[in-house]
Length: 67
Image (cartoon, rainbow, N blue to C red; front, top):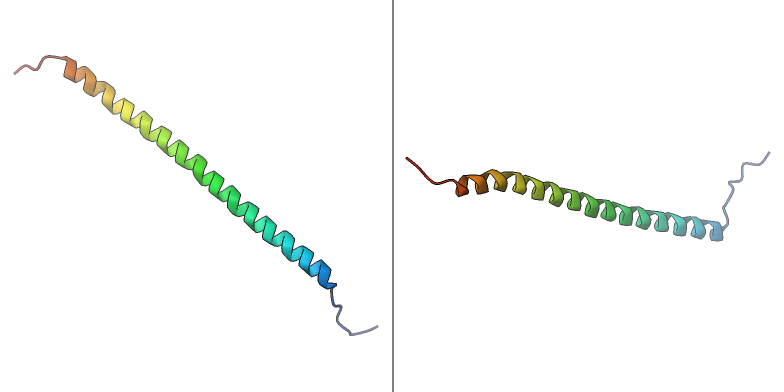
């Protein structure tokens, strides 16, 4: 039995590093795409809330003001 440490092939190291870098960038891209989807949902929710508020206001504005 030998105690000599196994040295990996440098080309394997480079390939693995390249794959890790690619995976990290792809995950970062997916994170940004997810942020975009969340922003669209937030905008849709904001628009719905605004419509819910504006509807009763428009009905109140149509009624004559009386004391």
